[in-house]
Image 1 (cartoon, helix red, strand yellow):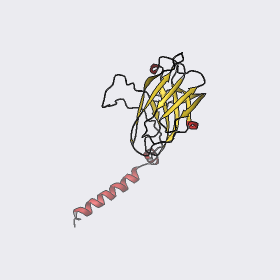
Image 2 (cartoon, one colour):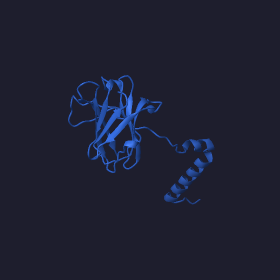
Image 3 (tube, helix red, strand yellow):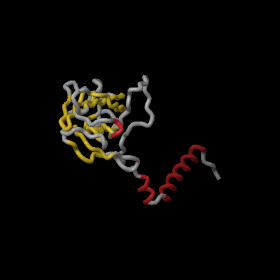
Image 4 (tube, helix red, strand yellow):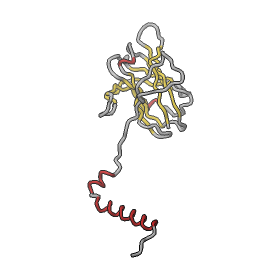
Length: 196
């Protein structure tokens, strides 16, 4: 009885193994192995590193549907009740000048949010009437709600854009003006996100 050379023996063993797996696998196993279209929501990481630690910095919660360059993405820049102490008459969002995405006022909404968790997604429950102004150089969004935003619930500025064409980390800051005699905007916090 002749013995096959080692390489031929290995090839036959691999082919037999593949054929054997194909015979043993049932239709239900094959269906389970098929890729499933799942859409995850990107949220801030649990740990965040900053080069310069500042006691005045406050991290705000957000949801971002895509982190890839030039992809269409929905952003929910959230303000939870613990993020503010007073009602908001006017909200200003500052944007870095290197965030080269086109922001259009008609793609912005102010939403009362239902915040998601492990088993549910964050979503807009109610659209709040508001006027949006975007600066010419795209470095600021001003939000003028029809009535001041109360302190009880979670609200978000919803933004649908195409992500910048360059990867990087971006920090958007929230400044709020409270109802009253003195029209001064105070810092609420920052949304930090990255584009891969």
